[in-house]
Image (tube, rainbow, N blue to C red; front, side, top):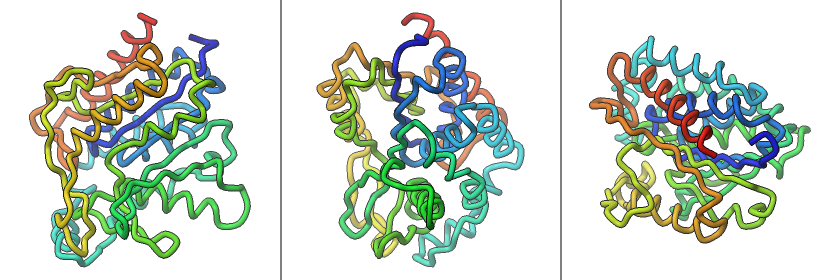
Amino acid sequence: MKHQKVGIILPSGGCKCAFQAGALKAITEYIPKENIPYLQVVSGGTFNGAKFISDDFTADPLIRVWQDVERMGVGQLFDLLTIILNQAGRNKPNKRVEELIKKIDAGKIIASHARLDIIARNLNTNEAELFSSKSLKTQGNNEKYLIKLILASASIPGIMPPVHINGMDYCDGFVWIPEALEDIKKMLDLIIVIDPEHQIDPFTPALRPILMPAGSWKSLGGSNYIYFDNLKKSLRMLEMIVGRKKILIIKPIKTYQNLTVVNFSKGEISDSIDQGYKLTIQALQQI
């Protein structure tokens, strides 16, 4: 695999995205960083992908962040009062999450050889939009702008406030955009989708749609879209764009009772990281 050009897609999943940290560590053992020219990220996957690039395509610092989150407990990351105030439309910042994101070296991401595509949802149009690191330069306020994009993509409706960018409010993008790979598909030999949702088998018709909120805090729940159905459609679209042989999907095979978007029980984060690592190693060994 040392000579293959690999793109990585990191979908959403909140605390479930700890799985992606283990998977990224496994990828570093098989694929040189110069052979990873593209990452597309959304929500929790945005934090993982951004930190991965800013730490020079190493996963150990990212894993340590998730281990710290596990040690301090979910209450320190998503405190109940902040959630209540945000659901009431008070737009209270989540200082802990903002601190984690502001530690990311945005300058390294902008200067990297790899293109980082970030998905965020425009609350004025209720449409997911894609922002590319390659459209930014290393001068001016572009580093702050990139940090705002990362924060916006990770801002879960009703739990974190929207992020104001260019006169618009943005939140968690939820679903990635396969169409963005149309212009670079020829340069990629393999696309790895690291999906933290264990219950999804995207290439079977048995997937049951689940409604998820996608409206703004001005009208929380006022507009819904079918998250899992859109995820399945995204994977089908990716298959049409690049061909099934170019796609490797890595997802958990173990269910965690309490590991959710904003919750987890003792040991679940560590187990999820370990599972992501082992399953990715197994998958890469078979290529």
